[in-house]
Image 1: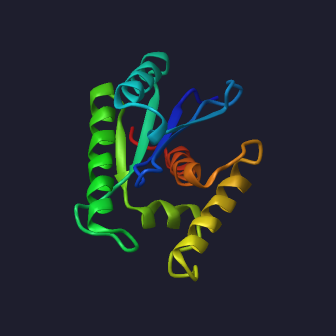
Image 2: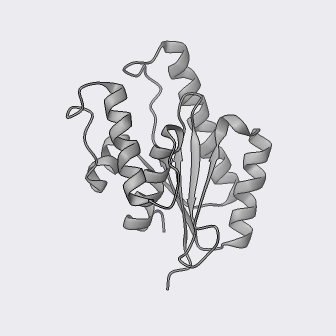
Length: 162
């Protein structure tokens, strides 16, 4: 039985989230931490304690680029990229091996509906939340948690950074 912990990180604009999938039989099985609800120091403490308790830990963070994003102002794009860089730095500092994947990569691997298949941005996000809820029926999946949970599931299915 695998004793690996899988972490998925969605930097998000004000709605970033870290999702953790613990090994089978562990309680809790799933944990989420919304980035907006904690300080960077809190998040550092959490990630470093995970690394200490679970030496076999792997993560995937959704890769962001420095350019502007569709449906996002330049200011929000800058905040998103800054959040991505901060979260990436916390992984490095905590010694957690990770991979960076574009949204389209992890979504395609999970068979998630593509942005093009959805009529609107909000429809796309709704469909991702529904997919996360179907994968984690025991959890109450909120819109802010869905992407991070799906990224963590992608990490689990692909083995993440090894």
